[in-house]
Length: 485
Image (cartoon, rainbow, N blue to C red; front, side):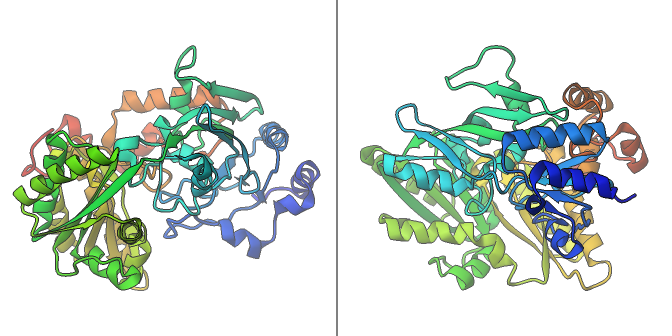
């Protein structure tokens, strides 16, 4: 049932007519996030400019039992910002300022629509940076990063969003403004801040954040190691960490990703390699030099057939430019691709990558691998043709098998993209009924009427029963050839 005209008019009164979108052609911009395989046309989009407008809007929607879907920059990859029937999309793109920057305490106060990269750009003159750096950092917003607990290529050493946010201001479904966390190393009471980060807009709407800034490292070096097989590259990842090294970033790309990226960016990648590892080391110059020698020795001992070292900033930037552009580069070699996101223990990388390749063949689809190898965060890109009947369904089925595989070896169905609407069925694989019920109790404590981003992230027990999903970590493994965690 469409939203009534008086409701739309009241939204215009609260926010101003320019901040309310109701025309169908304009609404199409908001029908999906970057996971464009799923689309739903929203009924109304609102773009508040102040915290008070967000609070007033939430009170108004509560009074009329209208669901609210928060939306950042739309770069999400799990359908977390998909519109819902009878609801509105609350976009935070106009709340995009960096409110203050404190170089002494190494913090920045920002609005949720502030771009990730803009924070580091603003802090650079003070010799500081914001560490989490998703591949979409030029466009993605800090509010969306908080909702999904985003990571990036440097999260191995510097942590995810949850490790780099000190405080958030959150507007609840009834318009209450909460402050979670603090400006110091710790905050009193329960750690509700960590609870809010990664909650995918189910508990409240972030309207301000205080983030941690770190000193720019005085020295940085990137090693590019080429391998004759993906399995050898994966084994080298575990060896690097086992040797006691902690790279700032440790990324793996297979041959298909290498070729696509080199043709797109010309980053200087060896196109004949079966796989490459990008290993970045940073810190004091003396430490970087010593660690580089150790890393080079480990990589050679584990099958590296070539190692290229980027000593200067220009070559370092080229190496990372290729990795950052890998997703759009793969988009040039296939009509469509389905991007998955799961995390596994590093020791299983080689076996899991081999099994993913086998499953791709079983489904008649090609899988391209480019991912955060250091923390086991996989991003298999399943190539398909959306114009060919049944192709997307095959890709979707293969993606589900990959997520089940991640759980089977002791991993999770997401690393940084969230669950959204895409991975709901696989929450039934990851968790037992009692665990899911606890998630729902937590949701009700913050949002008793269930108006914030309904139908996302946590499935109902009824839906799990309908899907008939098994809980693989308490039953038989679907991939018995792999070691149980």
